[in-house]
Each structure stands twice: as structure tokens, then as C-alpha cells.
Image 1 (tube, one colour):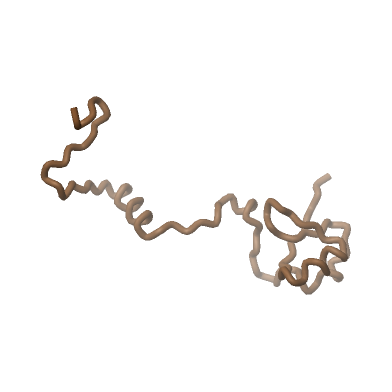
Image 2 (cartoon, rainbow, N blue to C red):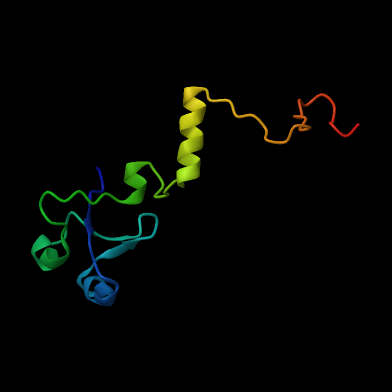
Length: 102
């Protein structure tokens, strides 16, 4: 038997109201949920709107982190095979065999 949950969109100020009706807090997804045996009519105002896709963070499989423009450019350059040269003329890259200061 699967334990189906319905995720709710609840403002913080209304958390006590949904809790009193029997909703549970899902800490992993940071969402209020109700089990399949609960009456959806009681939670109508907190149900996601039709057509709105509001998946919990764990369901998407991706963390909600935005990459900086520099990180995006670095990834793009790596994919394109761009090689950058040092601006310093006496720059010596460390190749891993011997430190450059010896």
C-alpha cells in the first residue's frame, strides 16, 4: 500500500489552522501535507491551483541553487574547450610533479 500525500500551499500565518485540521509538516520537503484519507474540501483554500506545478524539492531531484554568471561562463568555456593564458609573463603552472618554488 502506498502512502499518497497531497501537498498544500500554506502561508506561515495559517499553519496552526491546517495543523488543527490534521495536516502534517513534511520537514524534508518543507511543505504541509495531508494523507489520502483526509477530506480535501476542508483544505480547499490551501490546495495547489489547477495547472500549477508545485513539486517539493525532493521530488525534483535538484537543489534550488542559482549559479553565478562567472560559474556559467566557466562551464561554457570548459564545454567549448577554451584555454586561457596567464597575464603574468613569469607565471609557471604547477604540473603536480614538482612544486614551482624548488
